[in-house]
Image (cartoon, rainbow, N blue to C red):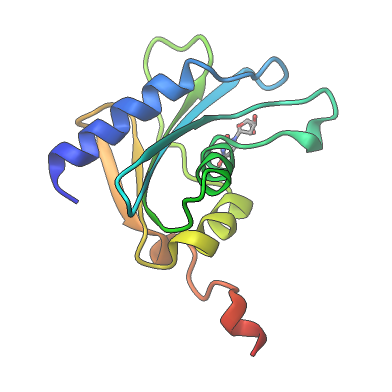
Length: 140
Ligand code: THU
């Protein structure tokens, strides 16, 4: 992925974060998922009074993509910070469930970008964040 495409995806993640529904944690997360076909799907965390029913931003974006027929993921950008924070002061790494969920449609080559701003970002492969992933191959 070129630098410009990464910046664009981060911008989309920031926009997605504005939609976060996080009345319980107060922690707002946005994600922008790029599919191999070039489409971008945005997602935010959607919390629930039954806390365990909460959906993370990454899975929100992934579900939107898959439910629209997109099953091949190229990259995801993630931004997270307390809802009212003026700046994003930490990288928001995807949780374990989201790493596993993304690996179903992205595989180890998928790009995972965590960002504090357009310029302050880290880029990983999903394989780096989820080594020895469980997959359909594991069951053969
Ligand atoms: N959250 C995400 O959206 N993505 C992650 O990878 C980790 C956590 C959300 C879930 C919950 O709404 C809030 O952050 C605090 O855990």
